[in-house]
View 1 (cartoon, rainbow, N blue to C red):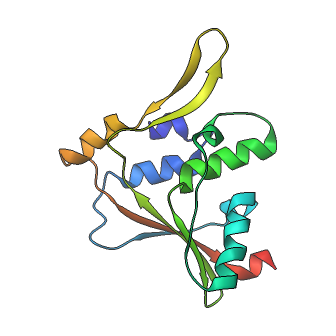
View 2: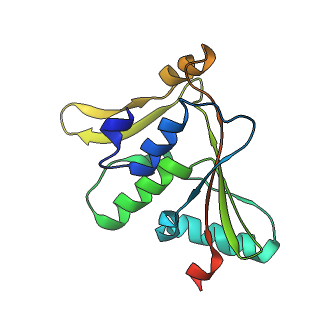
View 3: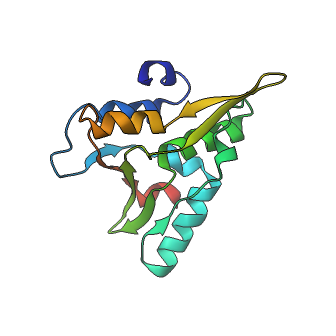
Length: 150
C-alpha cells in the first residue's frame, strides 16, 4: 500500500511504513511543514494559540477524494495524514500529534468513477494486521517552527 500511495500521498505512505517497526513506547518525529497549507489546520492552529491547548483536527470523509484541483488535492493529502490528530503550539514549535493505527471498520473513499462508484480503502482490513502483530501502533509527531506561519 505504501508504494502505491507514495506518488500521490507521500506523508500517508510514510506513516504506513512506520507500522512495520515498533514504536518502542515513544513517538516517531518527522520535521515537515506540509500541513501548514491546510485551511483546517490553520484554523485549528489559531485556536490552539488562543487557548494554549491542543486542538483536534477533523476532516469529513469526503475530503479524502482524489482530485487534481490543487487546493482540494492538498487538503485531501493533509486530511489523510492528519485526520484524528491533535495540533498545538508551544515554545515556538508547532506539533501535530497523530495516532498511527487502523480502526476496526472504516472506509476511506479515494476516487469516484462515474458509472462504477467510489474506489477506496477498507482500513478495517489493516486493523487485522495490527491484531496479529504484523503492524505496530503508536504516535507520530509532525513538527515545524511556529515562525513559518508569521
